Image (cartoon, rainbow, N blue to C red):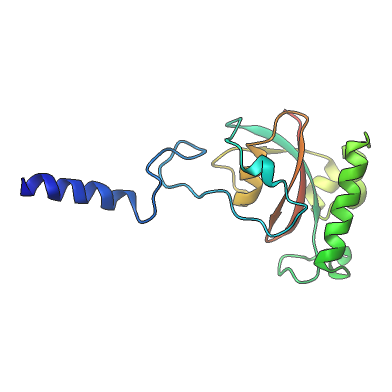
Length: 161
């Protein structure tokens, strides 16, 4: 009987504190939950879903603000978070009205790599991307657009495939 109790305690300890005890978005135990977001421009409804893909191609528009350590773009250094939120809302309105995402990406994105090339990032659970980007990217349906916040700013993301 003591042996059974010890085995049960070891099994619980192996799951770690606060473990949900089931597979995560990448079918691994104890993977992080979607990060709580602090802005009303963030697509909380999409983040609340289960992942719909293991791999996705994502284009994005990065919008930063001056209080972020990672904001190196001149435009970001001149705006507040509230101004960044207003810009994200404006861009989302344009996208929903049918604006060309790639064109908006070239004009507004503060991610120099994707803004100049228009290329999409491959998102997977193991991709070397910030967790918030992966969490939203794997929850978007093809053609869908959503917003997530990371240490780099707001990412307006569109799944292309």
